[in-house]
Image (cartoon, rainbow, N blue to C red; front, top):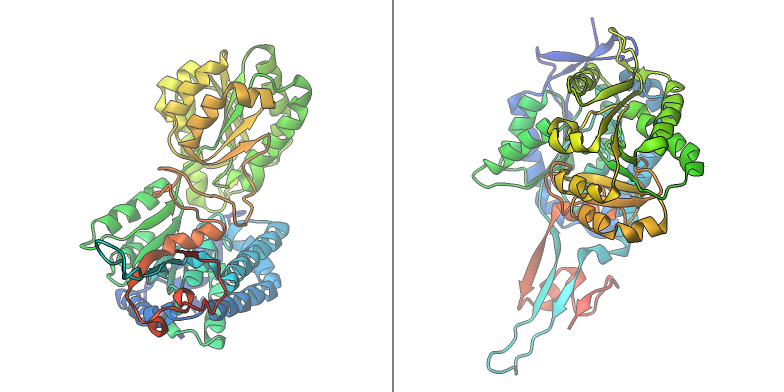
Length: 520
């Protein structure tokens, strides 16, 4: 009989129940032995009750206390790397180097937020002192800062089992803000989630955080997800996944009697613009970088460059020939689970059905595992502009090459494109100057603009923006990576006329935390 694992409810575990699921090895299609129990409605309610009870104690934690917890958790994750190397490839097909790299990225992300908390400036403290003699009306003493919103529901991503999952960027930024977190584990890597979830629980207990600071639920997005997002205790949602999934959560949250924000990162084709003055001598380097970026992680990065606009003529023919040669050298690899593989296949079939798209390369896909190989499609700019199916994301190692004759026509592309995570430009500085209007237009469509570099590989730092207008995300004012991610889970609170000793430390006259403040 299979071993059965259950949800984490604060410091307790859920019931085994009757509704179970197994993960599968995407390389072979084989079902893995351990079973996982779907969370019941009562368990979901229990997790929400614990989070609500923990909300005020979490909000009262100082920056140093939260930083201690995040560093403790980061150390625990690093110590788990060998266990992660054992289980993650079984559940996801990801190779050992990727597992080790993502472990380091995830622990590094936790430490980044710890440093942010230790510095303390992120709270955006603003002080306007009283002017009782001001005429015709006295000015009151006003002091404002950012405060946590309350319990956050986090939905784990399939394509980053660590960095966008149980202790990933959404959870880390919510904890840093002072919010309890309830994680909805992803069905494709439940064992990985359990390893990390146990580490989180241990860190919560050791650092004396309230029990409801963390819970983790197993189950489907349509049932557990709906119950979580509609529970009155939940005050915000973090999600990374499909456009349909993110939009469903967004609609549920907005249909509540008291709507809440949903920060969903969803869909992006990440256009690449090859400008006219890119030298032919640079083509080899360009196609090498493009093929590496487009097939990184079997194309399952949300910043995957899915569409390339390039000059036509002999230049365009040579570009596609060189790219075809590079992509033929890339071996097929396992996608993360059968659902992603099926969606990839459906997306390619949709593209191929267009009379205006030619197939340059389509690799064979196996039927048992989840293998996918590189694909290249091509079309003309005028056809792209009139066929909106070409504007849709095909999540996987596929590139649509779009030939243009006049670079001035690219402004029409910028007008037609939906919101994007990234937009990349390749060419010369003279190209950028000549097409400044294109860059300015795409600034309204993308969260990150890139020159002569590829979009995959999102640096975790203070300046990064991993977001963009809809449908890249449901809130184009936010980022899900970097220091700015914390701003999703806070709101400004103003204190008027409060005695100094009853103010938060960040707002007291003596500035005991020594933080940078806006004062007048």
